[in-house]
Image (cartoon, rainbow, N blue to C red):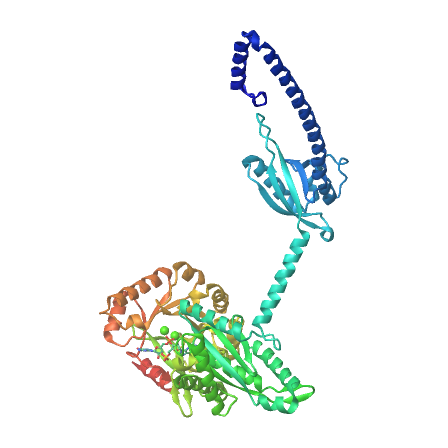
Length: 625
Ligand code: C2E
Ligand code: CA
Ligand code: CA
């Protein structure tokens, strides 16, 4: 027979059928009764256990309520609008409210204004998707009392059979200290990193960071097909300062040296101290190698200013070696080694100077420097001369204009071509006073000729450079010269190259308008080489375009040259502009241009640019023809 304690549905059926069977047997009846009594006792025992369990359950519910209230974590239940319907004591304490007294607390009103919206978004997302949400918010509106909280939001699970809940359980974690600690740690980390990568005396990057920066500069220059210059500086005679005045004095010099170097380089360049009196400068964005020579030159100059240490005046110069990426090396070590050996070369050459790793680079840069020095002298020594080249009416052969072209008559170099010195004059800014001289000279010459009855209805054209056009006072200066000379403004015109105008249409427009308001015409030089748009041509309202001589040279054989020349002529006609062809060297050029509708030509076919007296004779001869 089955044990009564193990009774289940199947065994109950078995038991009943067994009882039935055995009850039919009177001999077993007493046994059955006994079994039933035992069963009753068992049931009573079970009842008692059940009651005990129920009591225990009630006690534990109280215990869990305590756990909920006193848990070190703040819990709350809130609606989709952020209304707190229930919270534990920890949450009440955190929010600074007395639980029970504030049944309708809207959490959003306790948060920093920008966080209220985020809370509502998170609540509605959690309710919609059932996914947990987590967000960080600031509790308290006053900045000084503000606490940082992380909220973890979970949609309440509906009891089985019920609709989805519209409330969320929220855990509120106070992470104020945690965030403060993280911020302090990050700050410390940055400080440590700075310490590891910088020189403590000067604050400059040390060898480690220098190598890193040079590597970066090399990679970037490689991508952008550019050059990088590495300047290696060593102070001259620094050891004797340390020896005679002591290390603190030496340290002062190094610190001042660092400040001077930093004042000279551009953003993006790096000045580093490798140790001792060795410094490096990385010029990361180099236009061309020779401009590194210019920086090195300026560095030697700033060192020549005396250093003052403890009221004492000290003189310390520097010797600089330069290596260039990619020609002198394509990795950090090679570039450093080669700049270092160039530095020794500079020391050998008498210190207080610089040398490139390659001799021809050094020669080129020094030649440019001496050219620059000579150019500065040229204005003072009156070495510039203007030549004049006529512009002819192709149909009648009359002189309708003339272009003034500068020459530099150097005492030892002889006649220097403008293309050799104009770019240098532009990059050094010397072009500005030179242009003023050109305008002044051309105007005075033109006035003298017109006073003699020559060229009375022609205009002299002067070339202005990009740098001139950037000068906001340009038109004013030119206007002043024209007035002072007493020249009719219509007898002066200026030429500006197309590439520059199109690159800077806005800054060009102001000067062009101003010149035109003075009655001075403006023409575009080298037309066809830039990318003028019709719209900008119209807007700038220039008077003249000059077909670049590179297109004229190919006429009439070169198909492209012909097409461009014809297009420029047609464009000029359509916009009502004067079109001048320059570089007219042959009758074939002239014939093609005339047939294409071009009216004015300038070139060796008629005359080379001539000094003033020769030009005057030419004009007089033309007049007699
Ligand atoms: P550009 O303004 O296009 O001047 C025309 C150049 O073509 C002049 O060279 C002139 O001598 C040359 N040329 C004239 N006819 C012919 C010819 O038939 N065939 C050939 N092959 N060439 C011819 P130049 O005088 O050597 O001037 C060269 C450039 O230097 C000028 O080009 C201009 O950009 C600049 N330049 C010259 N003088 C001045 C100036 O006074 N100020 C400024 N800012 N730049 C000037
Ligand atoms: Ca010109
Ligand atoms: Ca030209």
